[in-house]
Length: 115
Image (cartoon, rainbow, N blue to C red; front, side, top):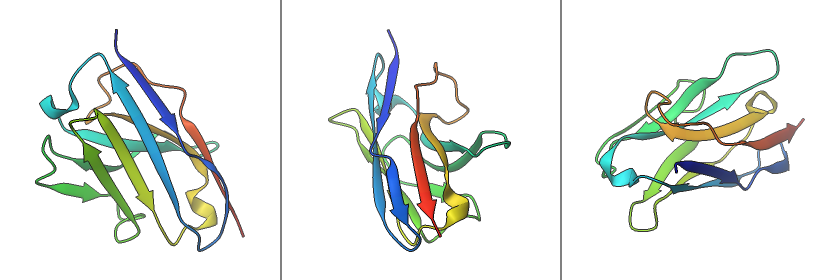
């Protein structure tokens, strides 16, 4: 049974940093590209960063490039999102999934950036 469990969100001041975690069960993340998504209030869920199966390549949405980094731990079947220089517009619920969002979504983790 596939399960994606995100954690690590919280309230952080503008300019702060946060690292999100995603524990994956039910398939090996080493088989596929993985990504982080976010859904802000009133907005569609968007892919903000992804990395290939062994991390050899990563790409990011313009809005987070240079501030966020996707890190994968294939041995532990975990995915991380390192976030820095946070802005109020980064406030959203954050999710992990395969590139393309092919697995059942987890509950996400809320990140709130105060101005």
